[in-house]
Image 1 (cartoon, rainbow, N blue to C red):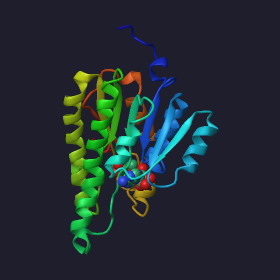
Image 2 (image 1 turned 180 degrees about the horizontal axis):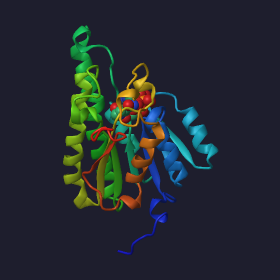
Image 3 (image 1 turned 30 degrees about the horizontal axis):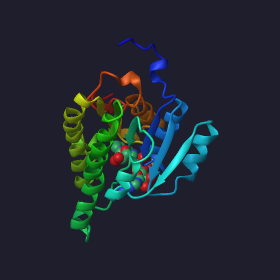
Image 4 (image 1 turned 60 degrees about the vertical axis):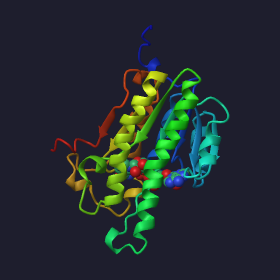
Length: 249
Ligand code: NAI
């Protein structure tokens, strides 16, 4: 195989990327970066995505919207029933901030968090692997969390969320094993705290080595990288994108 020199290896021209969670935060930023790299972007979320679409189109890129709830099997199937998808960046996820022992709907909440944060990435990635393997291969990037490795950034990190992200890291390994021989590369990022609606109300910056939490685009760059041909020798990797939190100041 001939090596493609940088920056051409980062080009997504002629490729279609599906980005979930694209209405907000990290998913929205990832959709914009993939558009800047030349991808045609299919943005997916259960919330309105008009602002993301407008921002993508303002960059001169082509965008289509897939509006729906990823917990529904038919919706997942519909995402892979049309045009070829070369890359999937799965950024949708939930965190419920209420203290779990005071949550009167704890059992339901636990199952909902596991459903959205664990079952959905498994089913979505499995559908993407079948789709991509039949069409010459592809790239899948999932989003775990520092909470899935350490139990959380503070005592207020919900246990259901931390456990769900630990499960995502395990899924990356399992999916990688099942996909690599079929030409599909599955990897992930494990972000530290990032400035998005999910972290509103937390003041975590001063405790971190850089004195601040991450910006959404600082996650979008590595996630988008995992979707490009430049990530040709990564499979089953989980990139720690946390501003040095595992090392300290
Ligand atoms: P966000 O709350 O800003 O965006 C998440 C998006 O996912 C929302 O637009 C929401 O509508 C969508 N979504 C949730 N459930 C869905 C479903 N069933 N179907 C379709 N769309 C659905 O969150 P943020 O911060 O951008 O998080 C993105 C990912 O990064 C999540 O997986 C999160 O767990 C992870 N993460 C975030 C960190 C942070 O500090 N913000 C830190 C570590 C990981």
